[in-house]
Image 1 (spheres, rainbow, N blue to C red):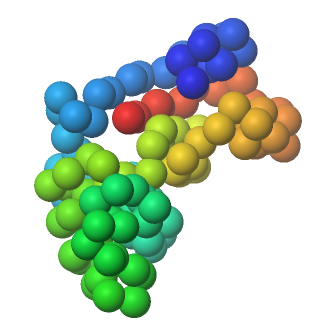
Image 2 (image 1 turned 45 degrees about the vertical axis):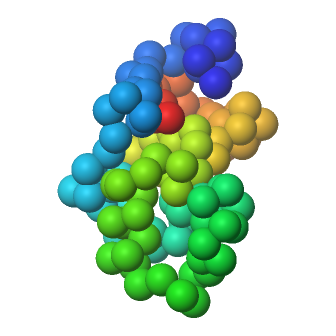
Length: 110
C-alpha cells in the first residue's frame, strides 16, 4: 500500500496497529457514524475461532474488541479524502481516486 500511495504522489501517515493500537475513541472517530461491522475483520482467525458474527456482537462490543486486538480490524485501513476504506486494495483506491479526481492526502493505518 505504501508503494501505491507513494507512486501517486499522495502524502500519507502510517501507523503500525500492533505497536500502537487504536483506542476506542480513535475507532469511533474513524467510523464517523458508520457501523463498526464495516471495519471489523469477520474472517480473521480470532473471529473465526470465537465464532463471531455480526448478529452475536453489539456495536460497542465490536469497538472494544478492535481496540483490544488489531487482528479484529480489517487492514489496511485507509482514510482517503475523509472517506474510510477498510481493507483497502490498490484497485479500490485507484477507482476512488479516479472518481474523485483527487490527488489529496490520505491516512494509511495498519
